[in-house]
Image: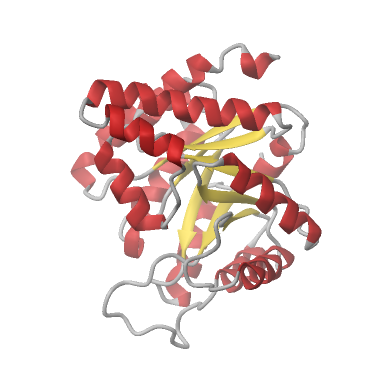
Length: 289
C-alpha cells in the first residue's frame, strides 16, 4: 500500500520515525525498539538512511522487517549526496525487489572533505525524485523546512525550490522539526499560496533531555520558543522531570495541530518506544474525537 492513499483517506494518522543501527551487532536492539513502536498502530514507520549513507543496508532491512513481519507500512529514506548515481540506482532496485513502495527522497548531508557537486552524483533532491519516479511505481515523500533551509538565505527561494521538487513527482512532504506551531501554520499558508498542494506532515520531536535539545539545534538550527526554554531551564537538571515535560510539550503541540485541522502527524521517536507510547497514551481519546 502507498502512504499517499492513507494520508488522503480523511482520518487522523500518527506515524513514527526510527533510525537503523550504525553497527550490525546493534540490529536486534533497534529491531526490538521498532517492534514496540509498531504495537502503537502507527499509520507508517519511516527508517532513516544515516549520515553518509553508511546505514543503507540496515535501512532496507528494517523497512522490510516493518512491512513483512510487523504488517505496518514502511517508508525507506534515501539520500543521494554521499553516493554515486549508480549506487543510488542500486539501492532503488533493492527496495523495489523487497516490495517497499514508499521512499523519502533526500539530498542528505555532504560528507566532510568530499568534493561536491560532481557529475557522478545527484546534486539536488529533485534529481533524486526524478530518478525514483523513472525507476518504478513508488510513492515519493520529500522534506520541507518551515523555518527555511539553512542553505537558502531567502524563504522565497526556499519555497520556489520546494515547488520545483514537488513538481518533479513528490506525493507528500514531511517537515523538519519545529517547536512553535505558528511557524508551521505560516509555512502552510505560504506554500499553498505558491501552489504546493500535496499533504504536509508536521514533524514533531519530543525533546526529553538538555543534551538532545543541544544536538537538535546544532543539526537543524531550529528556534526554540521562550515557553520551551523556560521548561528546559526549570526541569533540565532532572532527567525524569525533563522527560515528562518534553513528552507533555510534544503532546500539546500535536493536540494544537489536530485542533487546527491537521490530520497527519509524524513523530521523530529517536528509537524510544516508551516516549512514543506515552505520547500515544496522552492522545488516546483525542485521536478518536
